[in-house]
Image 1 (cartoon, rainbow, N blue to C red):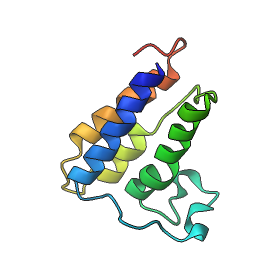
Image 2 (cartoon, helix red, strand yellow; image 1 turned 180 degrees about the vertical axis):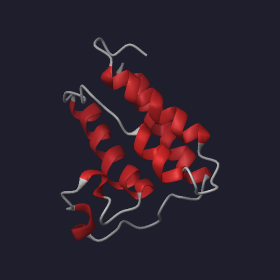
Image 3 (cartoon, rainbow, N blue to C red; image 1 turned 90 degrees about the vertical axis):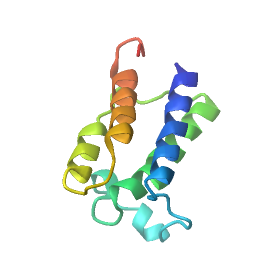
Length: 109
């Protein structure tokens, strides 16, 4: 399962880059310290993916830490992109796969 998760994380990064939503420099540390879900008060959803979600899951994979047992980020992506006009279908599909993989009892895809 960890290989599949890593592959999906790479896909998320690639899709953010293709959509020109990958930031060249990180936001201020204070923006990363938000206590709101998805840091919605300090970051855009793509920034949250890049600077919070991806690094945390990569760290868990690298250290052998337990992956989240439930994940529900695809609905946030759908909401964020619904009126944006951006070609987000592939990114949203990848996030749905991540949600299913991490939320399934045995980690089955």
